[in-house]
Image (cartoon, rainbow, N blue to C red; front, side, top):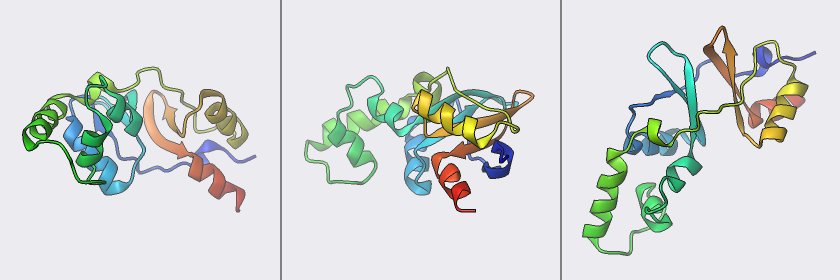
Amino acid sequence: MLTAKEIMTREVRTVREETDLKELAALFVEYNYKTLPVVDADGRLVGIVSQTDLIEQDKPLHIPTVISLFDWVLYLESPKVFSDEVRKVSARKVGEICTREVVTCAPDTSVEEVASLMVEHKVHLLPVLEDGQLVGVVARFDLIRSLGG
């Protein structure tokens, strides 16, 4: 029986609660991440943050502004409005928008159980914890890859 430990990604990029949202957006764009674990100074998982969390945070930052931040389209409103919105986003921290209730699994969790957890909780990334420490993550892609061999 295949386990989370056998298919997980061990080298996990994480962010801290004090990471600003501008840096978070840059990580999402540069590495094409959809979700990142949030850890404390000791490497313990304290939350998870997604592109959706970034886009939906407080909702005053409308989609064209967010899309501009990701360089996906040209910004069509005034430069001053854009500048004000960027300043607002930059001042916020990951700890303010991350999800604290995180579904996790252990290294010895079966791949079938990992898949069930992802479907049941509608998540695309499952942090793998051992003694409270983040030791890896299983993404849906890891599950699909495990089917091939």
